[in-house]
Length: 461
Image (cartoon, rainbow, N blue to C red; front, side, top):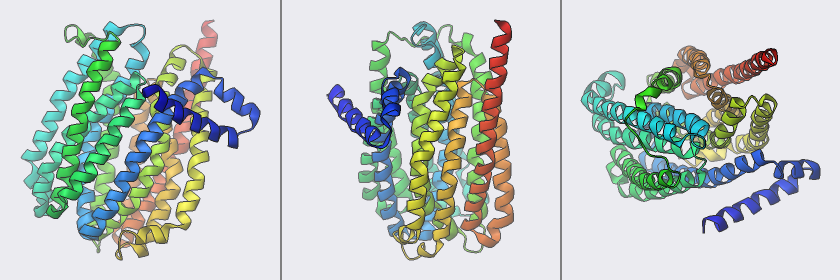
């Protein structure tokens, strides 16, 4: 079943490539081992992510129409907060696992088991502690930070979403390092389908019901992922070994720490920017507009996210083997593929933006410019995502931190200037400008690092 399902997806994708690409380029791509590996992961990731994104998008339209713009804005603020904490844990440790599993899983399964054990031990403590702190300080957060005391219970429920999201991210990091992208796809689809059923079932509870439904779905997907993970590690002869795992503690300092700091810069920044918008004259209604428009920006980013997640193992191995030309070919191949797909979508969706925003209800239709700005920002956001993952593959996590610091500073400064007068349009404009800056800057940094590494390798030989 697995071979047949992937075979159908692969044939379909290759037929599309053959139709659009010149014959010489098509033959060169399909004969490359690197392209085949990336294609395998990309096909499965695109299949799983696109289905789950579409399901989530349609669900959020129904939720927005049911809750209204103000309640939908409250939901968006809570989701941004829980994502800030959950993504911090899951994405950082997941990226670390992907990078070092890709480097060691084939040659040294014993070391791989120790690295996984180290990061799982660390993550269990940090994730549970974070969820506990959210519950403990929910009263303070709702009153002082959100200035909405009635959101205290929703914040407490979001701690469950933090736990499940973090562990899902960690599991996905392991699967990515092992290049088992079909398992990630299946879990994403399972999560989204179950979430639709549960969210709509609990929608009568308002914001609390949406968060509760999403949390239960994520927990269920996480438990199912654990079954898949144990089976996959067993088949590869990778045993999780606590004894001696702290020999690899330097990974936490050189890679996980700057990665965590980078997320600490980015996730709270966007969340705080939304808080600034919520304090504008139209308050949470403006946040609701931004949250609705972002539902279409998010799917635009899943294309570069797919390319980056499936290419990290390839980039790591090319970088570690000093194959710098092949490394840059993979990098620029991902960037060009992302632009080729995203630019036409940006144009089509931008022209359709008044109609798209009207789907969310009468309170959203006049704010179509917010959607246009977020769509135009998408290719630069995608370039930034691809470059971040490439820098992580190069083991340059501190560079990512400094780039994210620049991004966060520019976003907050521009939002502070514009949010009070322009609301969600000000935030979307700040989003576009900040990603325009760091997108091109990160590409230049990668080129300079490769140039330095090439010169260093040439001088040694």
